[in-house]
Amino acid sequence: MSARPLEVIASIMALLMGVSAPGLIAQAGFSRVVLQDHSLSVAGRHGVTARAEFAPGATAGRHVHPGEEFGYVIEGEVELSVGGRSPVTLQKGDVFFIPAGAPHDGRNPGTVKAAILSVFVAEQGKPLATPAK
Image (cartoon, rainbow, N blue to C red; front, side, top):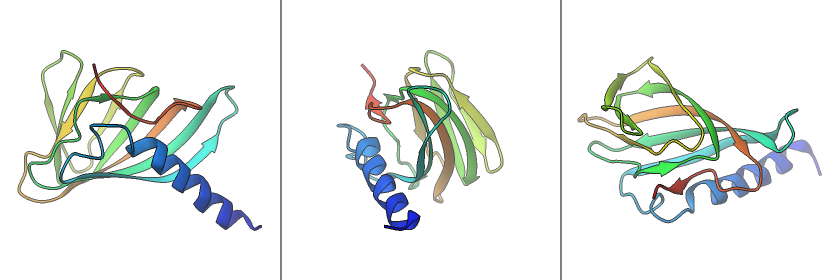
C-alpha cells in the first residue's frame, strides 16, 4: 500500500474522531476537515492540521481540545471567545492560540464565509474536540 492511501485513511479516521463529538457536527453552518494527522516525537502526542469553515452567523459551539491549538484566519472574520475573557474579533491574516483544555467558541459575525487553519498538538487516543461542560 502506498503512502497516499495511508494518509487518506489517517485523515478520515481523524476527521471522524475530530468532528463526531456531540454538539460540534450538529452546528449548522460550521464544518471542520482534518487535512493531516501525524505522530510527533513527543510521546503520546500527535499533530493535526485542520481547516474549519463558518457560514455567516454560524458558530462552532463551545468546546475543548486535548491539546494546544495554533490558528490562522484564512478568510472572513471570526469572533473568538476563550475561557472567561472578552471575545476578540479576528480578521483575515490574524493568528490565535488556545491553551489545552480551555473552553472556547468561534463565531462568524460577518456576512461572508469565514475560514481558519489550525494546527493542534493533541493527546493521542482522545477526540480532537469535545463539547465544553
